[in-house]
Every structure is written in C-alpha cells, then in structure tokens.
Length: 426
Image (cartoon, rainbow, N blue to C red; front, side):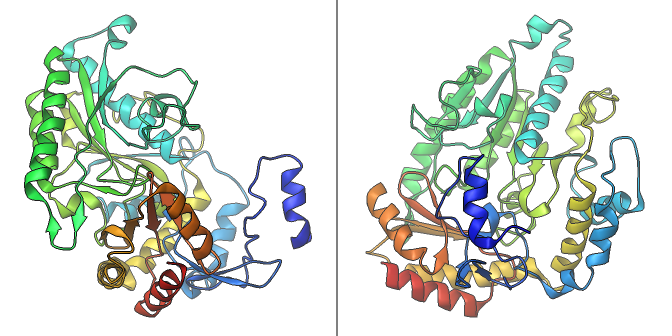
C-alpha cells in the first residue's frame, strides 16, 4: 500500500495533478466530513465528488452490506450481453424513480449519456424525415444553450461553452456548427425575480430557437434544467413550457441533461418535476452512480427507434455492475430515509442561511441542495474559495459564482457549520 505522504509524488510522476488536493481517507471520512489521510484534518464536504455522491461518507447502511458490493466486484460483467440478478435488481429499483419513461439505456460516463441521447434524436428525426443517406444525416442540427456544459467527448464538445473562446475544455478541437441560443437565466434579487427582464430574455431565446427550427432539420433541443458548470443558471417555467411547445410543433425532441440535477439534488427526484414539463429524453448520471438515458413514448412514433433496433446504440459494459449494485443500495436508502424530502427541507434552510450574506454576495439562489451565490469579480470569488477551503470543500462555476453541492444526507447542523465557515471566509 502506498504511503499517504507519497500519493502526490506517485500520481504526479505520470499525471497532471493538483498538488494541493486532499488524499482522502476512505475509512475515517464520515458523513459530511472528509478526512485528509496525510494530516488527519477534517473538511466539511459541500463538493460531494462533483455532486456525484448521493450519501455522506461511509453511510452505516452501506458499510453494513459490503458483501453485496464485493460479490459484484470480482468479475466485471458485460451487461449488454450477459445478465445477472444484480442487473435486474438495479433496473427494477431505478424504474421506481423513472416511471415517466418506458425506455432505458445504460453506459459509463455522463458525456456518453448525452452522446447517446443525441444519437437517439438523430436516428428519430432522420426516420421521421425519410432520410437514408449519410450525407443527409450530416445536415441534422441540434439547438443548445449559451453557457451549457454537456461533456468533453465528440458530440458534447460542440455544445459545451462558457463564453471563453479559449475554453481549455473545448478549444482547438473540431466541433459541429450547431445552433447556440441565448440562455434566459434569471437574476435572484432579495425581492425575487425581475419578471419583465426574465420575459424579455426568454423572448430572445425563443425567437432564436424558432428561427433555427425554420429549416426543419433540427433533431433536438437540449438543455440542463439548471446549468451547473456554466454558472448555476436557473430558468423559469415559462421558458421550459415554450421549448416544449416548439419541440412538439416542429417535430424535434426535447432533451433534458439531468446528469447533475438528478436523483434528489433539487428536492425532487428530477429537476423537470418542479415544472411538470416532461422531456422526450432525459440524461442521467452522477448521483445515480450509473449513467445513461431514459426515453419517452414520443420515441415510439418511429417503430425501429434506437431502443428497439439491436446495436443501434450499445457498449461493452452497458454501465458497470458494481456501480449498479451501489446504486441499488443507495436508492433503497434514499427511499427508506426519505432523503429527497431532506434535500428540499435542508436546502431551504441552507438557502435562508446564505441570504443573510446579501450585500457581501449577490444572486443568492438554489433548489434543494443545489445552491450558489455570486461575488463581484472572478478574482474575489477565487480568493473567497481559497479562504473557505481551509474548512469547507466547494466549487467555482461560471465567471464569479460559488456552488455548494452537499450530500442528500446533509443536516441542518451541517448547514449551521457551513454558514459559520462561509461567514468567516467572507
């Protein structure tokens, strides 16, 4: 076993790494507190592995069932062609969270979930149009939003943007010239949202989308219900409703990328449920532990769609059997302990705590435990995070925002500690 004090040197000998990163003590980290194995120092975790960790560290209901994980870990099964009871257990349990969707597809990685959502949309649109030649397929378009983040792989790079022309995530790589539209994000004042400004911003976005749809070759409109990496940007019901109508009128699919917002993060299982606007395809990952897409009934307007035609979309592992077992265990706990309701209640309490800092920070916003605020400049945001990270792990997003992503098990006592440390760092 590598000495904890040698971890940075070993990793740095082969990888580009953050030399100031924590070396996580996987045994001593507990609940909302992560421990650095080198120093023994504890940090309040409002990071949760880029919002992918649903439960706190070493949840007792997880550690008491380690044999379930061990049984699945010895052999890595190719789920696409070899089936197990563990796979079936996962599908049954996950279906309880996705009753709006008759079709599932599983894969490793959130970006690849989005990739396959686009492939499903291209296939559906092409067959709707009667297209049969590759060069005709190449004319198909996607509408996406300014400040979106959908991944770093082939298709997704064309839709990942943060306003920086030299964005290191995508700069210099070949991309498709798809249609980017304005993102009508709302600004949160102490008195609420400026409705007039929001409507005007939405009108710009919808008009841009409508113009792009005129040629009839748009396969899908894709967006995150709350844009995470792009700045924790929130949208109103009216915007989602207008996009839903456009997708229906112009015969394209509406895709929601819920990789970050899903599995209870916002106080509901899925963020779209806050607005009662159901997408045709939903991408999932992170807290689910397994990534993939859910497809709705509209896909079945094409008989031989990607969910019914063999090998149209596929992968060796079809997800990961160990991840599926972990996910099943975690979903059981989420249900038994009513953690989605906890995310709503504790998130509201956390948001209330953040609002006391208005004046020092602004645009204070959140749904459930997906919370953030802005500082007045990028430099001041970065300086604040440096001070905060002496005690609390959090993340930047957008140009000057700070985002908090605690576990679904986060408590009001944890919030009190977080607010105390935030006040100290401000």
